[in-house]
Image (cartoon, rainbow, N blue to C red):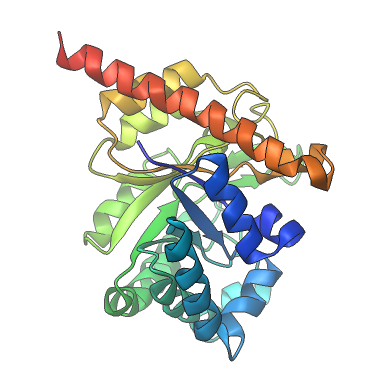
Length: 297
């Protein structure tokens, strides 16, 4: 199973190309082009975005690595989400252009969930169906798949994490099945699962082989969205491996654990990247071992 990791923290520390070299030399097969923050918005709205992307792809090709997926910008102010057709859609369309130039075929596009999910489920569903269907033809033209991702919100009174759009009350399955196209797939965020009371292994089996096309893999304390490296939190990775084997997951094992870099100084970041790779390899080896055991039964 191929293993990938985010570019974000390494790229901020070392620059795009040096980050990619570190990722390659650490052992990863591919990389996730992280465009989710304000820096990402700047990148995908820059006049030279396509030349930047083509140059980076050329460099990636030269060192024998590729970008398997990307994370589209999502941290938009409330008013932009309310006016998503004019405020957000153009940014996401630019992201698809950049991803096409990078050779990325899978783009995570967060659903809109800027208002209370508990009180506005149908309104959010209608908005998101319209949103994704606007994006659909452009994604198809650029040759990319749109990934839905399971989200969470905070309860305003208790501050506990609670379910949001594309969660496990049936919403994730409903959204994907309703969109019903090869243009869409599901990115299961392993770390988000436990925050809303559903174990990652249960979520994997709930969605199944035909829906999960990508992963965001990271650890946490099952309370806060910490984005830690595997083994630094409370996710049960043996059970996750069993579940991924049970559904015969065929995709790439993509880490979204860049907050682990917060614990080390810059000179030690490549060593943390190595730990992150080795811990991911331990889990993917488990997945393959469980698959082999099932095949030999």
